[in-house]
Length: 427
Image (cartoon, rainbow, N blue to C red; front, side, top):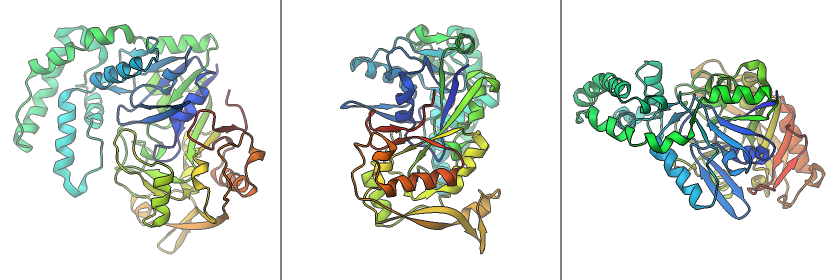
């Protein structure tokens, strides 16, 4: 049963799209198992650049079936717009499967998300304002709308009424906004039913049958480990589980079916939104990483916060995900530095700490302890094997591998599909 999980080992934006696309030609199914259109992947194929938000990166690989699992929250307008955009560029999207159990992001979820962030002011989390969190909250509160509800108007109406009973009270009495009409929401949601119908399927059954037939299934996480609702830097996290365990619940497969877990690591560290970030840079080096690495959010358009590689969070990601391999991306961005700092531990109140602090307070006060590694000036974008890399670049990769606790099996040396060094095969 060749089932692989591929996920971010930092705060997201590590280059998962490139990694998934690289594997896409070798797998039969690529599955998004959590998150919504708050996640973004950039994939470069030849001279074409694709920005994906809801769709699995495997949609760009002919012969691969892309799947949106039950753990994803779906904005129908965004999904249909993304499909239309790819169709216009000649990409075949007809194989897409959408779980009937996936939850729908309704217009009132988006409204609640935006007004709540504004209300929080300086205490805001830094959400994308796309209704992701409120949709997951509805799911947990058992007032959510699922894709399958679009095909039973009576059930849909009852569920929208139940959700708006409370939300309209909050919108009108707390936020001084107008109440949202049930009929208006139902009408808008029903308009998506026929357009989505060709894609809706029992994806749990499809995926388990595929694994029984020895098909290769790749589970693709959005965001990253440190944004996991349970295992991330709470409360500055997303509303779902990007970690490996989320693949089982978000796609409906048992943990014994997972054969490999691949963590994507950027050769430095970035994050978008608020929250602690020990290695964050506020100097020329930080600006250079941002400029050279093109560090702007695919979905948000916000500049990413940039810092040096943090081996403490890499070790943590290895532990909580059970990582078997790393895919190191954007090594080329570090070309030109005489020395490259790597965070090997934290200093907290005068103590050296080598593992991620359990306490939120401690992590907020963590200061990086750096080890300096020699840099390189040679262009590495044409490297095809590990031996093609400059000696200092090789040493940098080996040092990160030793510090992080899992083998680095692939290295990204440029944005293109073919600008990757494969050390060990993932399949």
